[in-house]
Structures are given as C-alpha cells and as structure tokens.
Length: 212
Image 1 (cartoon, rainbow, N blue to C red):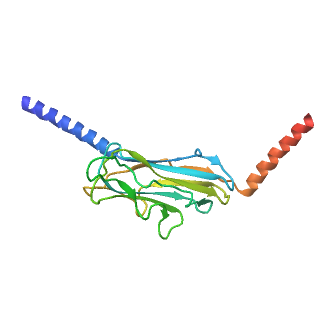
Image 2 (tube, helix red, strand yellow; image 1 turned 135 degrees about the vertical axis):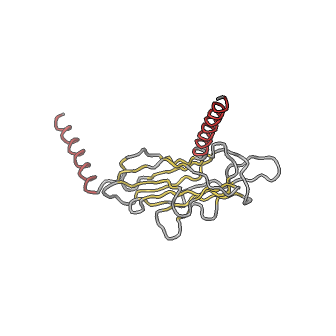
Image 3 (cartoon, rainbow, N blue to C red; image 1 turned 180 degrees about the horizontal axis):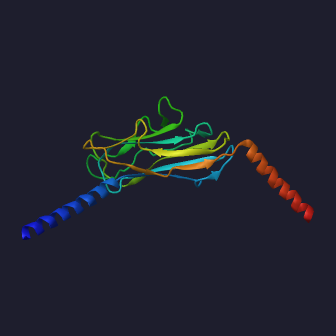
C-alpha cells in the first residue's frame, strides 16, 4: 500500500514539475509592439504613426538568431525607412573575456524581398553559435509611418513571429516560442466621410454664432 501511495505522490510531483516547466518555457520570450496612438484612433492624411517593438528574454540567455516582422497596410500607410531607428547592439554587459551580444543583421529594418508591407527586424549573435551575456530586454526598433491616403476601413499594424524569414533560435539550435502582442488598427475614413464630418462641425459653429 505504501509503495502505491509513494508512486502516486511521485507521479503527482513529476506532473506538477512538468506543468511548471512547460509554463515557464511558454513564457520565456515575449515581443511587444506599442504605438503613439491607441487602437481605433481616427487619422487623416499626413498624420504620423510611431511604432516601437520591444523584445524581452525574461531572464533567458543564449540567443543566436532573432527575427520578427511588422506588417502594415501599404495602400494607406507609407513607411519612412530613413526616419526609423534601431540600436547598433543589444543585450550586452561589459567586462569579461569573449562577451557576446546581439547586433542587427544586414536585413534589419528592410522590406522583405518581394514584399511592400513586411518590415524585417533581424538580429544575430556576434559569434554564432553562441549566447548573449545579458538576459534582459531591448527595443528592437522604432518605425515611423505616415498616412498617405485615406480609405474605407482600418489600417492594420500586425506584429508577426511566423511570417517568412522569422525565427527565434538559441545557441543549442532549439527554436522556442516567442509570444507576440500589440496588434492595433488606425481608422482612416473615406474623403467623403471626412468632408461630411467637417461640414457638420462647421454647420454647428455657424448655428451657435447665430444664437448668440
């Protein structure tokens, strides 16, 4: 009887351990996208949208390759590549011999070949295979867009870890999950709708002056 109880208890502990380990692995990496506008903001031609993408290793070191994409509506939004920025290195701590860290790949801050709406944020270790020394977080890039046209509907911004070319790889060759979040839309109404709204506001102003 005692043997059965011990086996059952041991199995329960092992199951709990695996669950905890699975949960820790699932949340080991996180990439988020934030903007200077909240979701659903109404914009018009000439307005500028700033998007910042942050990667958090959440305490895990040993990254060899890191790539995510920002997808945008290129019929409404124009990406200003020249005004967009990305640091020259990341996840570095000074001191010690053979310190390794992440640097932008040659494809970083470029449109993926053959596309006009997929911006690559590509990073790699300085000594592949290897591992970065600092297990922290950093802003991969700040992207600048402007509204060049208005349309009926939404201009979507999507952070992707599964588009062609995207990868997260550790120095041991494994490819852990990289949770992404922060997708948002901005609203760009049709010119007629914007005109009608403007005329309505102007009409209200005239009516208010007449009452005075």
